[in-house]
Image (cartoon, rainbow, N blue to C red; front, side):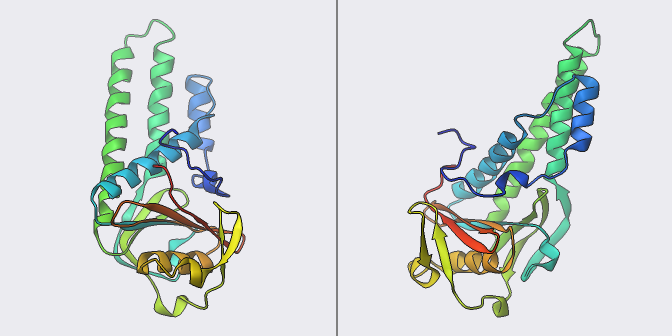
Length: 230
């Protein structure tokens, strides 16, 4: 299984970055390309972030929310927004420039190669840094355009609410959340509570032993996936 693949089809995962108009315009202008693999790059990016966090051996969580500002979540360490989606678009733009320069006699080809190299390394370092934020208590918070909003997030206590059912994607059955969460700690319980309250939320939870699990809200229903490949 490739690093970017998940063993389950999680609804709406591919819409984390919603607006590619700028990128498509750049690609069509420079190299007449489209972006058929853009979603693959999103999954690769998430995989790299999660791998860095898992390697720390601390455990952690990553919450991807439509609007973090309106979620029942307190962010202990808010930061100036870091737009990972924009940086991914920059990487694709540098690739299109490289492709265009290689198609004809162009003295700027080496410059295009260097631009692509620098952009790719910057993107990789950024993903590694985001993964390391999981070492702080609480969850790392991003929106669905892959804009990093902060870390140290914790769900508001009054938002935990009453437990309902959770749909286990492995067994394809609905399981009472009280039973599903019985053997898990506070990270998993908070992830479930957040997804129960926030439509289209995704929360990746990493246990200290390195297991990776996912909670997701699909039109009001909370989905659960375990033993994810990263």
